[in-house]
Image 1 (cartoon, rainbow, N blue to C red):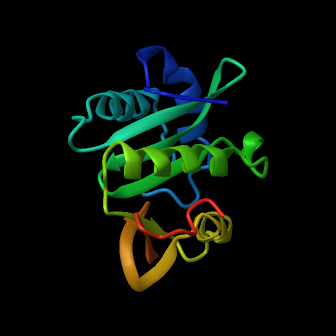
Image 2 (tube, helix red, strand yellow):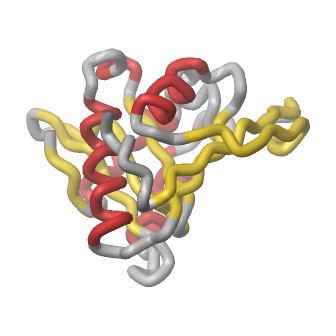
Length: 163
């Protein structure tokens, strides 16, 4: 597995992820219906100013299978194509992102906003040391449906990171 900055040539692989109903179930937007939506998303990702965030694609065996990073500091985000779920890849990618956030960018804290129904992501983040800091209802309107949020945080000084 390789984490690297996104490139224009990643468009088709990213569209396969961002148009998949399963991978987008808990995302902040509905699945991308048109490749143009993914092209805009990719352009935004590649244009993140380094002082504002850092996002990576996850590449495996020459194909992009997801993304992990901090689109805007200090909030972490990740998505994987369902064909690659439950293989430890998201954990591996997030551990590297967390390490960079604390050592390279010197962030004091990383935040996450997760749908309470997304048990797999909540378990993953908790396994990486994130602690729940709150909950809120009707925080995201996605495709005409209101979603709730569980807020989590990981502090730089927390020794449980990665355990």
